[in-house]
Amino acid sequence: MALATGGALRLAAGPERGARVAGLCILFGFSAAWNWLLLTPWVPIDALSRVIHIAIGGFLIGFAVDLIQPKRSWNIVLSVIYAAGSVWITVSGSLLGAAPTEAGEWLRLVLYLLLWLGLIRRLNVQRSEGPSVLVVCVMLSLGLGLVSQMSGEDSIAAVAYCLMAALAGYLALSWILALSIGNAVVLGSGGAVLGVAVALMEPVSQAPAVALLCLILVPFADGTAKRLPLGPAAFRRTFYPLALIAVALLPISLAAIMAYLFAGR
Image (tube, rainbow, N blue to C red; front, side, top):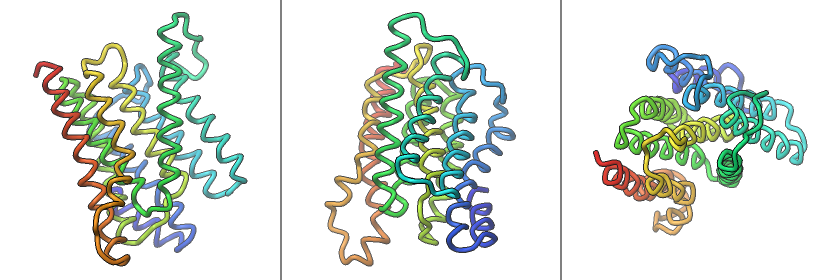
């Protein structure tokens, strides 16, 4: 669905604007899966059910930035506000929820915020590398799905796999058409992935911390992928995403093994 919708948006809106609008197809595909495949409630009652709201917020804020194209400083401010708001509703329970009362809750809030800002920053750095942003998000979704499945968190695994499918559809489109990666894709995709990760990091989750730590290496897989001998520049542009996928599979495989061993499944 994401592939077909993205292609239609790209053709309807034209080359430049279409590239910015097409990223919304990820949200359309993920929302459709949420409603008709996952049958997950839209009411944000826990960390997992808030993933769709976090994704919607990220895509809409990013889409507005892509259309308005404000100064870079405003782009940074909006990204920080989005990250802080997403973390706050996850920890407190709602956007206007009460502040945490225990030191452990504040520690979680700070940890989640650092992860959020770190990944968004990392994805912004990779925007000039073609579909690298989408490859990282797809592989993170795959890793989160495998860790969830191995840990017995089947509901989280289902959400992670559906998100991976929506991202993979747009990855294929952006790869074929060489679409530029806008703020909507960075904030929306990164936010959705982090929403799933946070659900897996909640105290009630059975996922072992050592498995989740392995997944931190995935956004940095490009450092190794760039050093692989991929031939001339023309071939490198084509095959670099495949090299990035291959390198990212290493920490993902390790994370799945750790989850299987330490979760006792």
